[in-house]
Image (tube, rainbow, N blue to C red):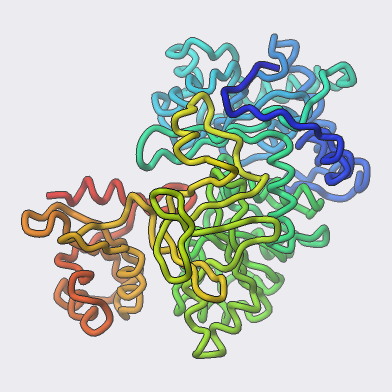
Length: 530
């Protein structure tokens, strides 16, 4: 197995194997389900229904055939495709034989995706019909890529691999890399967060506990699998052997799937929850089976939560905070805390919180010098957990910038209250400095979201000769609603200090977002910088 970079860690996994039930690799999760629940439905994708044994057999056969293409353990294989059963089979099959999966956003152009392929040194890329033209182009313009595996070839490899024996594959160590999860690159070139088999298993054990995932759940996974949310969703569901319904998200498909498969558990972001509530599909289909709605990315606006709880009265809402680099480990706000915040005026502030640290996770607020800050002080969230990435791929400088002494700085600004609840303030790079005063956009957004005409809003800093930067609100109005810039600015009177109030307001039809629902404020700043 080739060495990684200076952040490679040697682990004796004998004790850790006991913690994870004797698992040698992250891919063994699928094999364990095939042994324990061979005839139970494991994965539903469209019209396909695969038992755990069928899913594991396909994953093993696919992986076995890859060695015939000249790949060897430690080589990277990119997955550049929309959600499908083949995506899942590739992910677990690669892990079972010591190959390293590289996630690629299927919306990226050939040039953008080529950067990730080249950066990771991927020798093969798995694509679907929509990305195959780009994948072939990437093969032409990169030096490392040797094989493009489209859906028909994927099936051929499975058929040829069914007769092959995986017993001769090298032993996989817990410290070996299993996954390169690339960041969204919203502030520069994407970086590959490296996860070992052990850190992946540790992260999923923590996350399964945090989200109360159970084998009896029927889970719908709407997040793209290339994302941190998608990876967490698929690994956690496989970890506990929940029945999985995998979709490519749109509101109609989601509602149809919930009704058809009697879904009890799903994950969304506040924006997609809002879209679901506004859609006629949510009234057309029977969604009463939902018991758990997991969300993240941002706290949920109180009006949205109240409407969602009214529409789904038996559904528990749970929020988690984590980052691509922390292996889905961070904080959690439990369903009981959501209900408490709605029922007790003295606890209403909890709706603005992302909760308290998950079990086996240390979370602190630090200053620029990594000193721990006390309750009420604003600083950067730092996380210490064995689920953290082991570093950025071939980027020791960026690794050393965020990781030290087991602590990983997330780039998210927050404060902690006396009870240990954390409150996200903003991304470090999104903070506005106006006249030497710090303005955190999320604080302004929370106020503006209460305006009766506002559907959603993003607050950014734009250049100002007088103040250096000034606050601009970019607003999407509710259908049929009307408001002018002065209405929006005046609404802040008595709710925000003068220096935090927007100086200007722009109205647009929709906010730019990536596929995980994150608002692309970089795009807004470029558009409105004047």
